[in-house]
Amino acid sequence: MLIISGIYILHSSVCIKMNVIRPCVFINAGAVLFANRVAADYNIIMEENFQEDLAETQENGDNGDIAENGAQQPEKSTEAQLQPSDVEELDGIRAKLAPEKFFTKPLVVALCAIFCCVLWGSAFPCVKLGYRLFAIDADSPASLMLFAGVRFSLAGVLVIVFGCIQKRGFLAPKPRNMWRVLLVALFQTAMQYTFFYIGLAHTSGVKSSVLNGLGVFFTILCACFIFRTEKFNLIKLAGCVLGFAGVILINLGGDFTFTFKFTGEGFLILSGLSSAMAAGLVKIFSRHENTTALCGYQFLIGGAVLIIIGLSFGGRIPQISVGAAFMLLYLAFLSACAFTLQGFLLKYNPVSKVAVYKSTNPLFGAVFSAIILSESDQLLSFYTLIAIVLVCLGIFIINKFGEKRKKT
Image 1 (tube, rainbow, N blue to C red):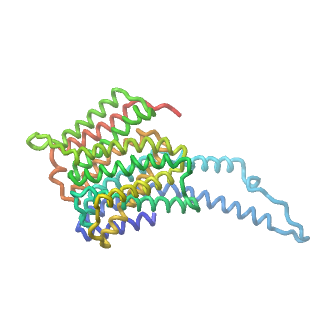
Image 2: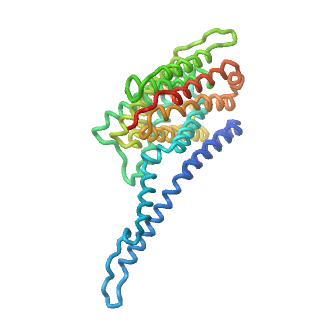
């Protein structure tokens, strides 16, 4: 939590320099509150560790007692000192704290998923602020890819360092799983963010956040027809129709003219497709590889690919400042935190159960873009508001009234 709070302090300092203090206070305060609520559940773990250490200390003390005649007292096992009811209680606590139990609790899933969406929502305006701070030409795809590559390579380093600390040793994927890491890196980082960064540069923040919400529907469609982990039915079809209706509506101007640019809206839709494929792959591959290692190395490799492509085509980052460095650090942190946390949720939950919370992505992205980027006129327009409602309603219908998932 200290690390998270520190990152947000750095992010706030950048926003102060950019004269966007008020929105950043809401973003940071809300995100930290979500993180604190999840961290509170882990207090049980600390209590259990304390009880185990106390029991071990008592056992060692009993083993070390020497009788007056110099003979060592017989060893007493910890379990022998505990009542049967105490042993059962400790076993119950251990079972509840197991990852497959902890990350399937509805409250934990909700808090973790919404926290991820808060981070992702803040990414829309922060990426555009990053363009300004680094003086990156939005019309230069190579420079955009270079910027994305640096961000995600740094995110990979953060995840790997966290994994090494958690493991208390060097974290690396198994050699036989490297092809899995490369495949996830292709869809999750290289393809998704090539399309995302270029598309975002040619689309407003509000519109891009709503279009990005299509990734939820693509995720469910891929789960049904490509990975076949769920069944598709008419209720899910109705939800998808509502979602696409929202996408069409966000592209309608006041004169009912349809505006669509392939390198803008088109690339954002392709980004959503890549994200959907990556979610399905992470769900499957996490059974064979450590989730932290899978996420960390796919970021590192995918980011390196973007850097190489960006530099090869003449991409450059014209200026670097302290504020720009802090913004880059925040963008890397939100990717490292959100996608790794989502990886654990996908590992232990059905895809649709996690995807439903991404319905808040368009909401957070639209609100933050309107406040920070001063796009409130578009946010408050009739078409945008109805589009957001349709996207969120479609996702809700799919996950609330869709076919019940099989028991595993």
